[in-house]
Image 1: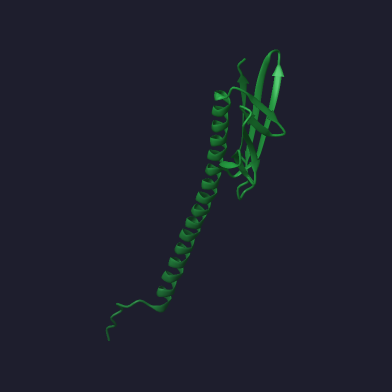
Image 2: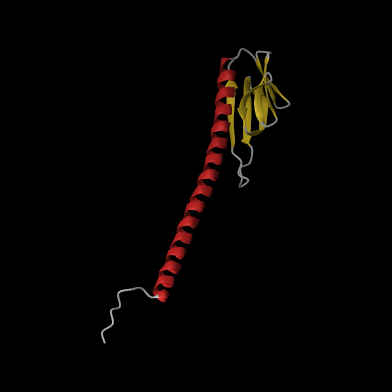
Length: 142
């Protein structure tokens, strides 16, 4: 009696299914980790871009100005334009310029006939409690 064993046994089928399940689980874990990292990095990049944009706008406005005054973290340019943080947004005369900003620190320092404006801007925290802070010093010409 000759037996023809061309089929697959139940144990072989279960072993293959277990291996495929393990491989798919690992692939899904890697994919989800990558998605989470991308989301975190996108938020961090957006916060960095917002802080850089705010620094660039304020620096450009100060350099074009005839007069600059900084007090109580409010920047006043030419006596009419005010820049301050309200509800996590930097606003110019009440109009939003940049969002996702936690803090704007502006101070005015005078030394030896030099006047400078110091600006520190901090973004809101991302999911991992990382904040982005940039600062600059602008010397005012007399």
